[in-house]
Image (cartoon, rainbow, N blue to C red; front, top):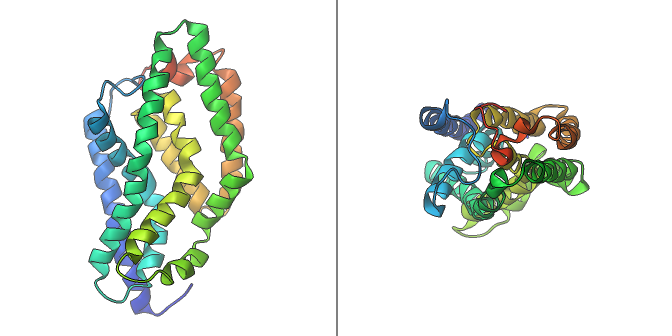
Length: 252
């Protein structure tokens, strides 16, 4: 999708805002959690606090790869662009905030694996790695990733949404595709430790590469294969899953 310099500038501003928001979220994460050991489960947080932390964490990790889609969507808006893009972005993040509910349940349930006998905790970690890796190789992952990598068709769909709810529906719809694409990567944080800073950095790079790099599909498959390999390796090196084996050292 090409356009005049004015149209291109119309999309560049919102993309820059999303990148700035992601940078602010990263600054909070590093300031608040940098240097801490990987912690199992919900990190001792109750549901409201966990959801707040989860939303900021997903903003840091997801917004960089979403900025190009936001820029494309902004180019379809001719009036009240700032407020409408705020609605689009808020709806996108609300999808990820809602995903924090099952994430909390999963973290709370699996966090107890760190207190189980070593073999049981390691088996749980292997299952998490295997499930995440297997999904990376499934056709549904490919379909969701395709929508994120080539969103022009989505722009045509969003243009057909009537009324003032268009931006809300568009942001939520794209957020749902993004969740379908990336949940298998986010679930790995349960194994690595939900606020494991280095795991977040690596997974953010993977998410961005999957969506924006020319070989993004190959990246997705390579990460899936690597995750399945981790499902085997964790039996020899339990510290690979510090969030489930209690072997946190602050790294992956």
